[in-house]
Every structure is written in C-alpha cells, then in structure tokens.
Length: 453
Image 1 (cartoon, one colour):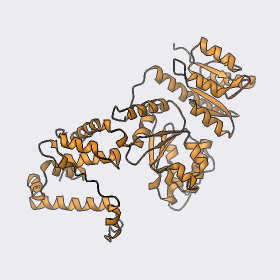
Image 2 (image 1 turned 90 degrees about the vertical axis):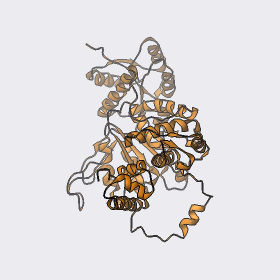
Image 3 (image 1 turned 45 degrees about the vertical axis):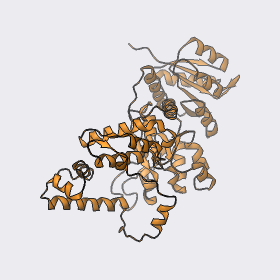
C-alpha cells in the first residue's frame, strides 16, 4: 500500500483550513496546517511535503516571501497561492516568484482538485527524474544552455509564458519543450497561428459552436480550447489577433471557461497558455493594437529565444543534425560540409535564423556531388540593402490568387513530370535532361509527393 501524499496548508482562517482538510482528505491526501509564516517555516524544516497551498496575506509576513523560500529547498515542492478574486496582479507576482499556480477566493473546489492533481504530478515526475520528451534545442553554446535551463524551470510552472524572438529562431520548439518537460506532457499540445485564421471564423475556431448556431453550422464543433484541455494551447503570432477577439480570449483565460457559439452554459477548461510573436509586443501595446490587460495576462513570464547569429557556436552541431535528418528522410547517406562551406555558414548573418539554415542545407544536399557540400552548393548571397524592395516594387506578375510558394511548386511539378514523360519515366535520364543530379531529382520528387510515379 503506497504512502499517502502530504500537503502543507498555510492560512490564518480556521474555516478555510477545515474546508481544505476535508476536500484534500477525500482525495486521499494527508494535510498538515499552519496559521502563519513562523509555523509554516518550522514545518518545512521538520517535514518533506508533496504540495504547499498558501494564502498570500498572513499575520506575520508575506506569502510571496514564503514562495521564494520554498524555491530554495533541496527538493521540488510545487506551491499554489490563494488570491482575492480578480486580483491578477498579486497572482502574477506570485508566479514570477516561482508559484506553480493560483486559486481565487472564494475557492472553487472543482478547480482546486484539478490544480492539486496537476501539481502532484509535477512532484511525482520530478521525484522520478522524468526523462525529457519532445523536441529540444540543439547546441551547447552559453546562450543555448541558458535557454535550456529556463525551459526546464518554467516547464514545472503553470504560469502563462510569452516567447519572444525573431522569425525562424525556434519559438515553437521552445513551446513544445516546455510542454513535454512539464506535467501536461501526456496531454495535447495544440499550436495555432493566430494570423492564419480568418476574422469571421476566429470565435468558432477558438471556442467551438453548436449545431444550428449560424448558417453552415451543420454539426457541433469543439474549439481549440477544448481540443487542448488537459494540455497546452500555443498561440503563435498572437499579436495578429483582432482587438474584439483579444477581449474574448482575455475572458477565457481569466475565467478558465469558454462558451461555444450557440451554447447556453460555459464549459470549464484546464489549459496552459503559451504565446509567441516575432513582433515587438510592447510596441504593439503602446500603439494600442494589442490590449495591455491581455498582454499582462499572457506575459506573466517572458522567455527570449536568441537569434542564430547570437549562438554561432551551435552552427556546426545544427548542420550535423539537419544533414542527418535530411539524409534519413531521403534514405540516403548523409552529406558533410567542406571547410569553405563551414566558413561561409559561420560568417553568414542568417536573417531567417534556424529555419533559413535548414532550408539552405536542404537545397545544398540535393545539389552536392559525392556527398560533400561546397560553398558553391550553399547559394547564399547577401543582397545589397533594399535591393529586394527595388526588384519587387516594379513586379506585375499575376499569381491568380495563389501564394508564390504554391505557384512555384506547380511549375516545378510540371518540369519534373514533363522530363519523366519525355524520358519514358527513366528517372536517371530525366535528371540528366534537367541538368541536376539524380539525388536532387529524387529528393524533389519525394518533396512534391511524386516518388511513386
């Protein structure tokens, strides 16, 4: 029979302590109560706990100071704080100090039970030395080491986190790492690009709708919040949300509940919010394009992802990682970089960051001979400033409503299929007719879903 887990409850109100003792006792937990900071400190020295629930206003001290002290214990102890209803500033300060989460008074027992179960899972996984899952940042530079350390710490919290960084720097990888190293790892990770959802569909996408709620609503649909229940909702490019949707999102986060379109009642949700954007969110708030109250709610803790040029020591390891992955996808032997190619990559500024590096290597892999990538295979030329704008300003080419990527993919497909047809489906001959290597030809077929033609 396993030993019951132990919870330290710190509150100066006897009625609250009794309510918590009864509730936690029904969950099979042992409760030890303290009425002030002095008694709590004494208990923390004498015993080891699995969870701490503390009020922030205590007769002989500040609960936030207790939170900070608990972070210095030689074992992991998640701590949740009680705050007055609507007092989000206090809750935010507590989470910045290291609190796992907060509970508003008067206490909602259903929310409390969910919080307790999640927090105990944090303790259990920390005790078992839970192995990291999901993606991780590649590299061993000082900037990357700092980032990994932050991710590990923040994964154990429930605080909303804002991930800042340039496009292509790896913000979604950070979000996934936080999710998979935390107690919600077994739950869903739902990423959403806020800028890609049409404004008229946004409320339905986030909150869902009921059948018949509007024209075209032929069946019930769950929204992104419900899809992420028990896990993490990652709001990428959150700065692109229209102002009216920002109001609705703020309420959902504050109330931990959503109402699908056409529904009569709210549905409680248990979701951790992570958000990111390549824009300067502080500037967006100043320009009144982003609500300050939502900004402070999602930006309890900010984590900055360094640009690739700020972690150049990682470039070699990243190249090895991507080249191995590309070769595996192609079922070919991995290519390597010669000294000229390595030097060129180390001196390049990478305006597109890691995403650009991956694209450069993917292209070079298909063009190189004898599994050796040279500087010429990289095809990276840094154009004079504003040259792109000058070239594009006079362009009058029509894409017929398609994106440039879609248009180019169609052209590439036509060339490949045309060459195959002319060469009677001999792939080696088709590659030669196009003036590219067989490796490049095979890779392009696979990328475009034509490998079986």
